[in-house]
Length: 122
Image (cartoon, rainbow, N blue to C red; front, side, top):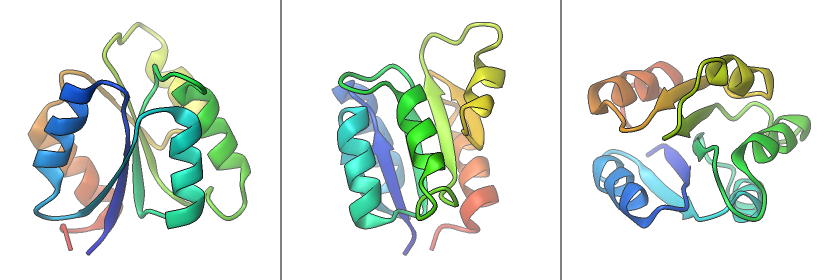
């Protein structure tokens, strides 16, 4: 079973993502960018869903640091943001995100993206 790390500080969003994914994936969670980076280093997930607006270390910086780490840079990161503004997707990709989704999330599109990066959910 593939492992997905969700880095999200909003409890409602976290709960929704966990419920969506827990049947097909092993799900790890962190509620700030620093904890997300530590979890990624320790657990080496197959994919990371990274909120960009996070406490302690924001998602932008967390992704930059993950992608600068030779042991972690291969892990696909999908950026998630509730406040999508023009240019955010380009900025997210520039800091190392492999893909980008605006909230509220389109569940079908999320699973398409997960299949793209991980293959069918096993």
